[in-house]
Image (cartoon, rainbow, N blue to C red; front, side, top):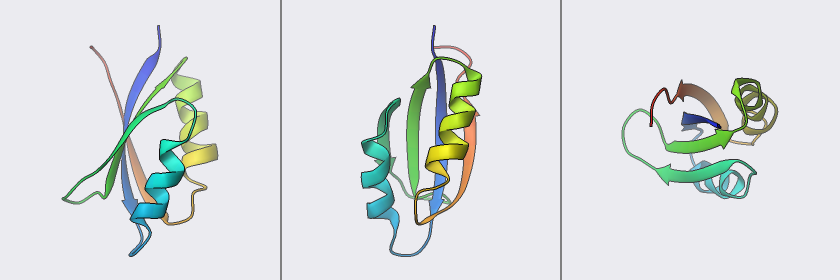
Amino acid sequence: MSTKAFILIETGVGTTQSAYESLINMKDVVSVDLVTGPYDLIAVIASSDLNAVGDLVTNQIHTISGIVRTVTCLGIKE
């Protein structure tokens, strides 16, 4: 069973599109949507377990140029 998470992403001015393009091609990223409101993007990821989600967020998503802040929301029931 995989672990599903919703990553709420805030980007710097003018960097949303490039961050989107980087995210959409990552392994375990199911979808990425540009949204309105306090966040600029929402990515849905499905990884093998909680540790894999943490590694993906800290080692890959946080290193994308233009990403300022993220909030990770774990899915608890599908």
